[in-house]
Image (cartoon, rainbow, N blue to C red; front, top):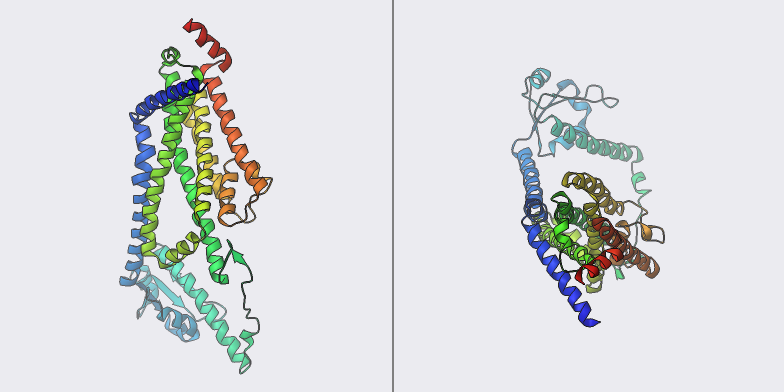
Length: 419
């Protein structure tokens, strides 16, 4: 029995090796499995970050030019004070501010003559800094409003600190992941843990999904499109061995895509951590929640998700009659597979007996429960068992559809051909 099992595994390994070589000769596989996660996404994120920092620096070296209508400046002291303390705004004198605004010599004109009932902030839509100026003035107006309210309350209250009446102090009486921490640290930890985990899981699911599509098409769909299935039929192995070998090749390339994605994400995370102090603190607090047992548990769930994704696209690829048809179907599935992990970010979504039956999402919620020490044994078992059952069912259907008949009958044909 063991000799037959070893021989079967060797046949599967041979088929998987041949399929891997075939897949790596496909340009689509190289682009979407290696190039996109390793180069394109990190470069895009880093470039976006550098552009944002450049724009921030530009706002300070070339501040927004603002002028006041002289008759109303003394009626808006709070806004004048807030604007004066803002480095991104430079107050300039103008004899005719409206005309200068129309000539793009100013980005903003403030008329406070109608204050406090109404303050007019005028912008020029033709200015290349119109949107930036609008957002900046809106944020400064909120600050000025808060300052004016504070001054009004203190003026009316006098010695009585009315503004202190409703101040509330919060104290932490619980733990997060079995660790005692301040309430602020707990909030940051809970937030960052969820964001890091779900963002990593969701982004990685996107990458491995994209990485699984073209290996599956190369392994299954091209057989039908190029009419090489008759040649594959002559291989001296059982047909189920061929399908399992193809599935193994798709799974290996899917895992490879995930590993490449992990390396590129690690680079991007280190880059942003070095740039942003608050992100460094959030990641530090989040990583304290990850023990070796947690990491192994999340890795197991990730492997189950990978197998499920590989089986989904193996079924699609074995069903499609052409490369284009498989691409169209895969695009629809891609949307669903990548949206489900993001649902875990929504309030109220936790692992329970109902969400344990939702594929993909249940794996993300299991990982979230592991990290936050809120996992339930029954729900975890149901989620993992369902994922394995769906994977096995899809693989079986891939085999049936790919060969066009029941595997049992195919094996009988194979045995008869060998006599």
